[in-house]
Image 1 (cartoon, helix red, strand yellow):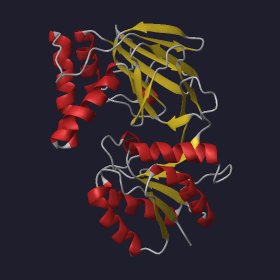
Image 2 (tube, rainbow, N blue to C red; image 1 turned 180 degrees about the vertical axis):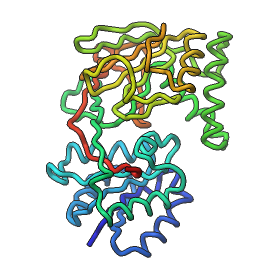
Image 3 (cartoon, rainbow, N blue to C red; image 1 turned 90 degrees about the vertical axis):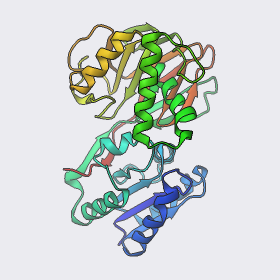
Image 4 (cartoon, rainbow, N blue to C red; image 1 turned 120 degrees about the vertical axis):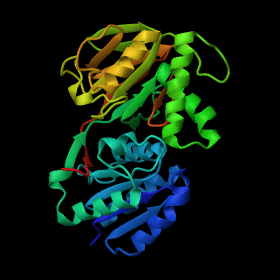
Amino acid sequence: MVRVALLSNPKSTGNRSLLPRIRAFCAEHDDIFHYEVEEVAQIGEALRTIARVEPVVLVINGGDGTVQTVLTEIHHGQWFGETPPPVAVLPNGKTNLIALDLGAVGDPVAALERVMEIARNGVDAYVVRRELIALTSGDDASVRPVMGMFLGGAGLADSILFCRNKVYPLGLPNGFSHVLTAFAVVLSLIFGIRAAFLPPRPGHVKVSLMRQGQLQGRFSIMIVTTLQKMLIGTSASTMAGGDEGALKLMMVDHRPWTLVRAIFAGISGRLGKQAMNGVHVERGDEIRIEGVRSSVILDGELFQNVEGFPIVLKHTSPVPFLRLAA
């Protein structure tokens, strides 16, 4: 009997060194069905095949783009009908926000061993449900929404792109790369330095929430998520701003000391729990993002505004995931 179906993308950065260990582990366990794709375009067909073996748990082994494509295919393809298996995500990627939210940290093979243990002994106590973010953009109504769980926009999107394009190529450890990027962001904001080797100044954006109104201006951070964990120590489950809406939004004004206060509030665990000048925390069922030169990044994939057409975010029905700690 297949307990676990493991879907791997060998071209994900983390798999360049990890995949031989994963293959060896799977060879030792006859209740794992391991499917490797050569490119993300094959993920739909991979899920069609995986559905036939009826796994107890579906595990994703790949970067943010792989996770996003799998979630999109699960939602639109309906490969598992109305009862998809709970999804687990191995900590294999640059940021691992979804894996972190599900309690998967450290060594990916050890996380896979933990998934196997849970699948063999009963998953019910470990299943959690999360809505997905459904993103649509542009003027082509026939394009299906893309699914994800964490979106960064405004200055945060610029910082992610800066880290991806300027810092990661230096070959530094991921953690140090993220710290270096944060330092560059704060340095450019506090001292007003503009240079090619620093993140650019965020553009002007307008964010509209159905029934809650609009926010306009320049923002150092914009986050929309359905995860329980956010950045800089913030837990989305304890965010202020009411209980209405599955989409959790946080925006920080593009002002030096507002950002510094937000960072320290996040480190101390206070960010989002109480009102703070220049920090906007809301919940909603639909969010529209507009702006000139406005980019957002949904689970690693870049989307840009098309003039006259906002980026629209909605949420889906809850999807089962496997949390590695009860």
